[in-house]
Image 1: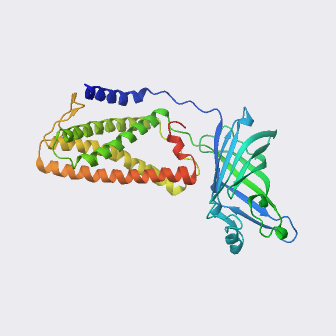
Image 2 (image 1 turned 180 degrees about the vertical axis):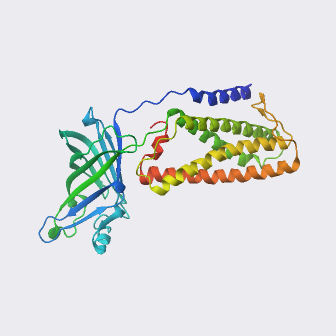
Image 3 (image 1 turned 45 degrees about the vertical axis):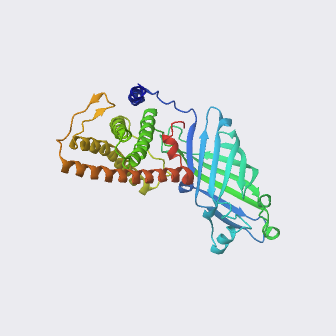
Length: 371
């Protein structure tokens, strides 16, 4: 009885994915900025003796702009301190040393807004906190906004921002040469803000995560069951492996049907050209493997003379006649495709980690069901 209930629950769960509610659009505009379409420049020194300028090449930021309630808007920027660059190579290397940015110990600096105030139709006052060398201090940015396009579609430019502020480097433990150079550091941020790439529909997210969890289970069970001795446990493991594999096949077909009706949202403009070419190819290969694995398993059962009863209820037709050579060929193919799937999944996960934790460009949040 428990096994029968489990089978019915799983079948119900697979089918109910189609009935999940539609997502609700957020009220605020989500925008992204970054080094690819903007700059963070600074000028060190306020004396007549010495003044130098530089910038950071690698940085990412996110804005949430609420036109109806501006104080609810937020800004967050993260800078890779290793990407600092001055005109002089020697100065650049000096800025990376412990007396200044200490990039080995503090590879990132960040700004997080605590308040946004509209001061005119095209200017804002953004108060927040800057964290540098592990020290957090308040900072004020005066921001001007130009070329606003509030109706810009997802993945297009929304507006151009220019923010200016000043910090004292002594407040962050950078006091070397302060008597000669001075204490003030003027910071200027120029950025084209692009509307956040639209997220996936809730149904697409549901199908994706159901498939992901089931595939991980299939891989774990598949690696475990092959070395089991002949027993009831092994027979049940193989049966559940087939049944869940066919659920994955059904979910993948549903995903393809949904993609034909509702194509994936466009990638944000922070994604590089080679990533744009590689992403659809890798996703396509994953979908092909998710179709091929259950089908080769079904074919293998047929060639081995074992009729598949889906969850012990629905008898599926034998796709090929019983034949030992065909069975061995299909078994080898099934195993090879399994390892190819594992490798491609590993690359997929590493890409997700890179986008979410290194580039922080919001790619993962497009598919995360709670975003």
